Length: 90
Image (cartoon, rainbow, N blue to C red; front, side):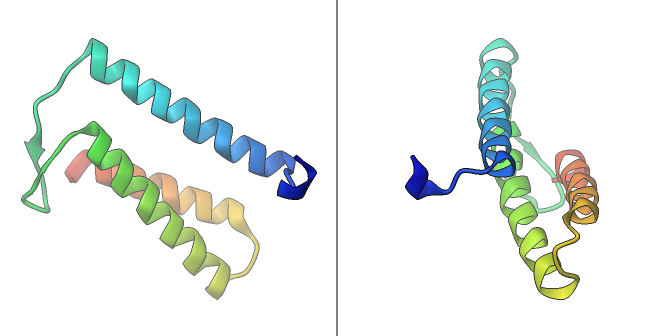
């Protein structure tokens, strides 16, 4: 797998995403939920809000790289605040 240029941060990223997906799958099986309407006035489930969070976080990180540079730990803080807002109000 040398052609993929795996690094520690890359592997960590994919392990975290896989862990989140497994966790949300287990939550969906153990605690089924009904969709709810939030600020967007569309019905969303936990999985929908997770997808919105991951997509928005990708855009936040890309914008951060373009505007600020490679100081990504602060972008992580912004993404966590964004995730909390999405899961609370969307």
